[in-house]
Length: 291
Figure 1 (cartoon, rainbow, N blue to C red):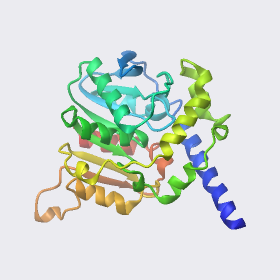
Figure 2 (cartoon, one colour):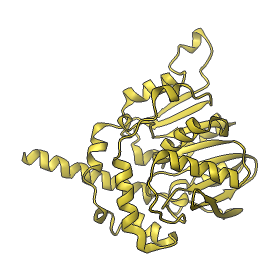
Figure 3 (tube, rainbow, N blue to C red):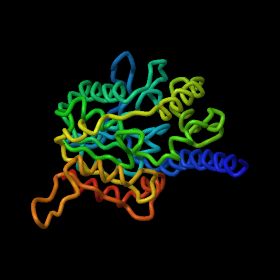
């Protein structure tokens, strides 16, 4: 029993450390100022966005507890050289105000579509990391004509796509565990109302711990080319990941036929956190797939 208790504490500590780390390393990466920024009135909420560069639109969706800067700060300067980059901050994150509205993938995906409508963007390539990846999947399922190419970084369309210990760890998370973290500092720097921090964290813990499944059949119906990028040790169940790739038409013997339009990249020696720090690697994959 003592060993089980220690293991539970270890999982909580590892998860918290993961969240803290992926919020911190990127925070000083963004060097550019947006060409445009503002709030889109969507579904009773004002959703914040930033626009960089010119060209074909590329929508970026951040991970849980993150902001545009902390997630995409090092990638935006590279991506905006050839693309019109539209970065969105989801409900309660960054500049987007806290709301008592329930958090779920369908609503958040609808918010993203609303931002696209506000900016008069009929369709775009979409990149999502972690939580943003699940929202990107949902957007593609709900509104397939809005997504040209889809990039999913270290994410899944169902909660069982994560290793079991990930779901188990979220059950024990408490808001006080997030105090005095770089995440809290980033929130305080841009949030419209800093007093909502605890309520925001509580809502996110519930959201992160709620099982979800968008359906194998819906994934199999996706017609957009999909690039899945994962770390070899990023917390995703790799058996489930291969099944996802197969649903998308991948895992073929291409020498005996056509190369699948969807691709899978497994980056060696990378976890969920460290994967997003590999700016050159991620950028190279994106530029090659989205060209």
